[in-house]
Every structure is written in structure tokens, then in C-alpha cells.
Length: 178
Image (cartoon, rainbow, N blue to C red; front, side, top):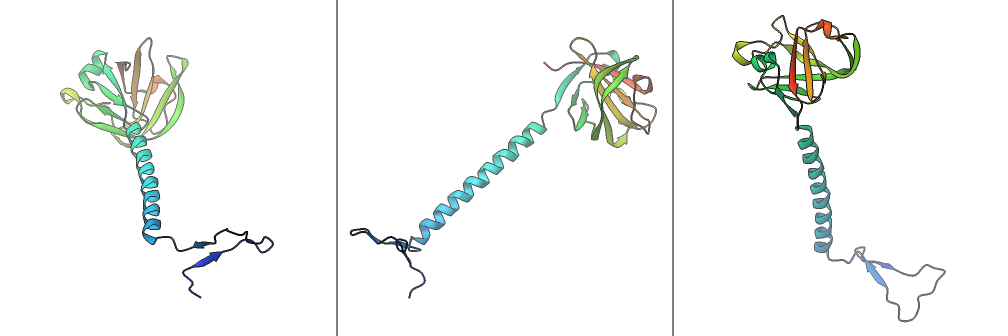
């Protein structure tokens, strides 16, 4: 018996009706099977690539904040901030390792904020030769809404996550993204 062809018959308790044809499984054109399998694999791969490229594009969309305070204009210029890093106008950046707090004390009141730990602490040289902190490596960055349509970004150089604005080494104010 040729194993390449397996005949499919009606179940044993049901007789084959007259005029009913038996189907041969395994006799399909191998090229058609390969083509169908290739199309399915291509569709799956295409879908995965679309998902990955979309999520990558979303992850790269940092918010652009326009320098508003004299300090921000003199030191940082505009910044681009997201949950992964802060990038300064001159191209320098600090990457974050994790979000350590979602509230923060500003002038004695508790406000919603994002406090990030800096992955590799540093005090980058920014606009006009100024440094971000000027008093040691920046270890934490915090941001919060600072009034109508503005955001405050503070930097810290302590070993422990800051709990209030009293611990900052510098404060910068920016216009919110439009």
C-alpha cells in the first residue's frame, strides 16, 4: 500500500452512499501546500513586525517642553521628556532606570508628580557651559504641573529618592506641550 495516499472512508457505522466519492488525503499538490503555508507564515510575520514597529514608534514619542524660566532658557534650553529619559536642547540626555514616586511635596503641599531614578548619574554640560545641577551628579529627576500650562522639572543629587522640593539642586520651568 502506498503510504503517500490515505483513503478517507465513511465511519464504520455509516455505509458509503451510492454516488459518493472517496477523498484522498495527502494527495494535494505539495506546491499548493507549501504556498499556503508560506502565505500564512508571511501574514504572521508581517503582523508581528507591524505591532513591534508601532510600539517602538510610540515609545520614542517624548513630549517637547519649551524653556520658560530664565534658568531653563540659560541652562537646559527646550527639553524632551518621557518615562524613559530627558533629552536637552544640546543633545545631551539622562536615562531613567525607574519611576520611584508618583507624588511629591512642593512648598509643603503634596502634588501628583513623576520622580525618576537616573540610570547613570551625571551632571551634563548644557547651554553656555552650564551644568544641570552644578553641585554633583544628578541622581533623580522630578516633574509636576506648576500652574496653568506649565511644568516644573527639578533635579537632585542625593542617594535617596527625594520627598520634597526642598532637596533639589536646581529647578526649571517649561511651557506644556501643545
